[in-house]
Amino acid sequence: MQKEQELVHFVQASKGFGAFEKIKLIIFASGEKKACFVRMKISSENMDEKAHFEKHLKECGKKFIVSRPKTFEEIIRVTKNKAVWKPAGIWYGYDLFADTRTKNMFLKYRQLKHDNNHKTADKIGAKIYGYPACCMTQYSKEHDVNYIKKNYSYYQFYKKVHAVDKKLQFIFHIPCSVECNASRRMNEEHKRTVIKLARKFYCSYSAKYVFNVDVIVDSFSDIFDDNGKSIWEKKNGCDAAFLTAKKINGKYYLLSCLTKKQLEKWAVYAASIKTQYDTAQLNLGRKKKTLKNFHHQRWFYIP
Ligand SMILES: [Zn+2]
Image (tube, rainbow, N blue to C red):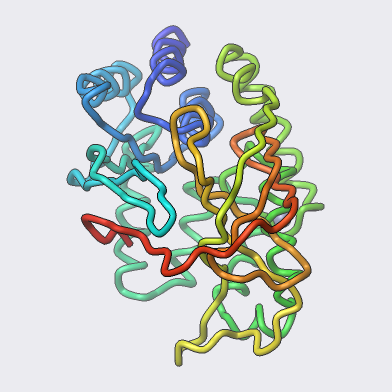
């Protein structure tokens, strides 16, 4: 466990991984998961982290497949009519495996997905990533947009998404429901492991913060059918991404919030934001104004 603890120490302090990536890595290092996928961001602040990370992985006997570098952007300025993005660095995707056997299973899984054999691929995927069977079955059903259309109203669907984000922060799959026993158990086990192996990280991750800041309605969540039409003709709610008009801790954020009423694009609201566990709870105050011709000025398009 010595080498694994060293890997956890590195992960805790690294700048290249977000909080959720750190949790995945801590659980992977502990041996509770046999595989995971993480993104490592490299900027001028952490140039040496890629080599450092790979050294730790090798010392622990872990196997990995690393992607080619891709560029990522960040918002550097928000003005009355635009959000300006700028290239901020590159990121690498890492598929990590506990052993060669798991890596070989993953290669098979990837090939099946490539061949559009999703049913068999999903089964192998669930084994590699350790998903509960009930969640896997539900996930396969929800692959089909018609199933979602039949079983959820717009509001119900996004309410579930937010409830999962709020209640189950230590799992890496989409649970069949917020009440899923297997997922809740897994969430508790992972939480205990994170506290045990990375207490410092856990303390900052679980700390609560409150900010008051104006937010701009930026875009709306939706699901489209094969013809590009929304699967919900009538929407009984509004799940929107809000852009903070000012920086919080040195960064602009995009936060999502579900409301019962319909919102106008580019409307500006006073808001209070409570953050904990990498998720933000947004409470909208009064509407201040609506911006005109707001747009995102980007250098690259990142899908
Ligand atoms: Zn489940």
